[in-house]
Image 1: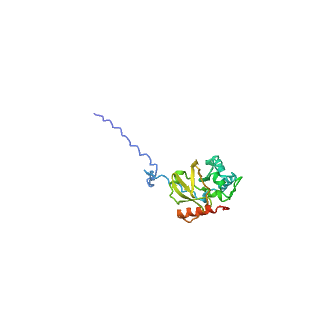
Image 2: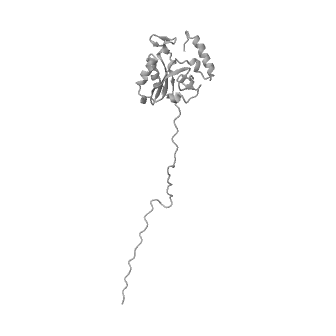
Image 3: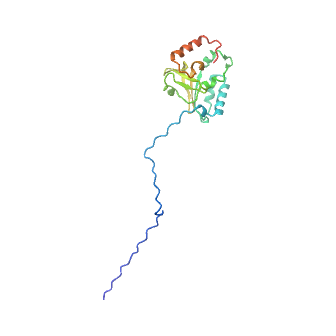
Length: 216
């Protein structure tokens, strides 16, 4: 009599429960794009975006400096990280001030409009300025008044027909300073009308002939 051993029966383990009910579709995975474009640079700061109180403090300090030479001393000691805007300053020499009709022994008798006209509300190094063509108008903090690039030659770069004698006197992340030969005149160059270069030069020569008592 033979005995047959019963083979052990292996019970299959039930499948593990699904983490999600079968009736609910799994969320689709989103993968980042393989290529991405670099972020666009911010547009140049507009005048209305500049904090007025901070700007007024800067202008008051420049007026209190007494002359244009004091501008460089003041701006050199200013922490650029404390400013929430950028700017370019065109600073005439003291010799230019001494030849100006309204100059006094104590220094420049500042018209309140003079200071804003020498400030462009965007930091422009000398290499940046050279990218502009002749007769380009640079907006200033004097409303609706512009500084005109009258020559963009590297060795004879002029704004309002005034030679930039010392470009990039000071350049940091917030502002740049350029020394210019003459006092700027917004009566000749500052308007909205686009002049021909010959007309600008001719008008400037006429004003030099009648500069006695002439105020800007």
